[in-house]
Image (cartoon, rainbow over all chains, first blue to last red; front, side, top):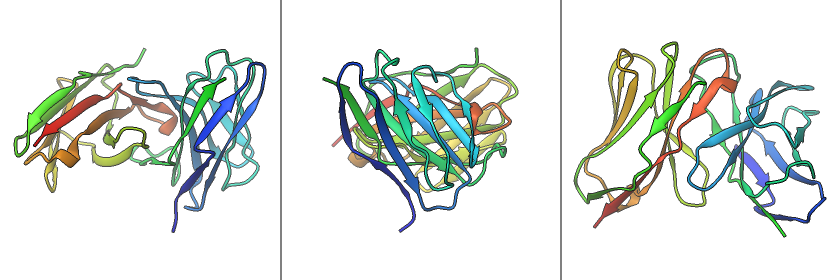
Length: 115
Length: 112
């Protein structure tokens, strides 16, 4: 089955620790995205990537880093510089960006909490 | 600052009624509009997209777009308890999906 796989489902971070959230897709989509969702809030864009080895900052990139070494994979690292990391993190993909009618497909999400 | 505004609700309707969800946006250049459904603790799922003025129907769902008034709405006919979820409005301001702005969502509760 094609889809987007996020892992882990739940993640706990200690103060000063970096943690990495995994996102893998087998939809052959070019574009991938990371969103953050806080309770009662909409989705806010952290980073997105249109092609391998290239990515752009979204609205709230500070304290986060990404890589896109393979088309299928777009991991997100939450660094110790992100002082309020507790949130629901969603990875998404679309066939290609640059087309305004492109639809997003989401993974199942990772809930990150601070110990 | 481009914004997408939704009434947070909760919006409560009886089973079988029509649920009406509204969304307004701030930038007239917007051309693509999407409605996502999100169940509690789950990821969003696309249910409707609309690109031109007027109505678009898909089963029990109808999306309505009025670019002059800068609003987009979602009607759910014959509402079912399984429709109880948060509905997110998303607007693409152009260029790429990096320009997709989400509203905070409206929580819908359908009472049996």
